Image 1 (spheres, rainbow, N blue to C red):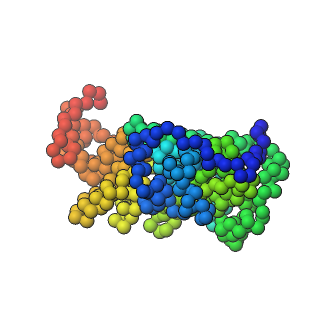
Image 2: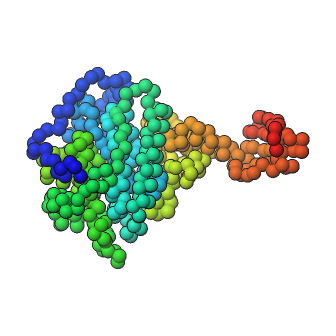
Length: 421
Ligand code: YSA
């Protein structure tokens, strides 16, 4: 690495005075006026679960994000995603939504692809070691994840920004700073700042050490790399907050301790709750129950169906977590649901909002077309077609005279004339 590994900002040097300039744009005033700040609002939605370190979360952390208090605006927040597969999934989406909320409030966010960390495998929340991934595989997965993150951020901007000024969305890959890293230099500079007792005390490590399989050194060192990333982003991007699922808290704490030791500065961690399946397993690749965001792996229709099938007891929570709908509107949707539960209004709204965010209007339209077919809303030549993938058969769907009679819904009839058969 060309840059020095540790560039120490002297203890006590404040980062809290980056300057509050300009007038609050209208969109932000709308979103953040009133007594409730950004963090309190997201806590009320159930999106932000834990804040770290405890002692800073009553005053310092909220003040970082709310204009007019501490005066350090905008902040930079990051969340990491390891490319262990070639697509993001619904669990990742929740962490990404956490970043989007900060971006909407005018802060700069970084989605960090773990092109280096994925080679080691994060032991957090795992009972078994990850299958080792070859470098080329990780590289191509990382490329796919970077694309996926950028596409989602672009959809988000296009669908919701409405000319408002938001913070930036930057995609980075930690292989950029580990690729040329000399291992001896790294261990000599960084290793001395970590205490074995603290590293060993992490739940992720304890769980694995107690398992029959034990834990590899590569996995054990994972938290050191994630801690160093936080430090790197703190130094280069003034990033003071790391966001992640609850399973990431141990790794985030390691980053906090490392940065605090070196610089005397406080940084913070925020967690989002883990989305689980009906059996309680964390939704993701490891449990084999991932709902992917890449349409080649999970089609827009399947994504829509995943959300439309959610039970009544979860749907309100998911509307708060996975959509940007204001809380009063969600209340209203739920009140209507009590009167007409058979319409599954909240489920349809949830599925619509998420599918549109992930796949855009075109993806949502395609999901709805598929849904209409599978629900028996389409017939060709008076025969219902319920498989959207079914092939048009000459003589059955296309009559000898080159015509088809298409019926969509109850009232829409079309005569199709095929020019070439
Ligand atoms: C983080 C920071 C770094 O500097 C470097 C790498 C990382 C990646 C991190 N250690 C990790 O392995 N994350 S992950 O790829 O497994 O998931 C990405 C994010 O989505 C994490 O914050 C994770 O907690 C979250 N996530 C995954 N499945 C989830 C979920 N959040 C909610 N519900 C789920 N089912």
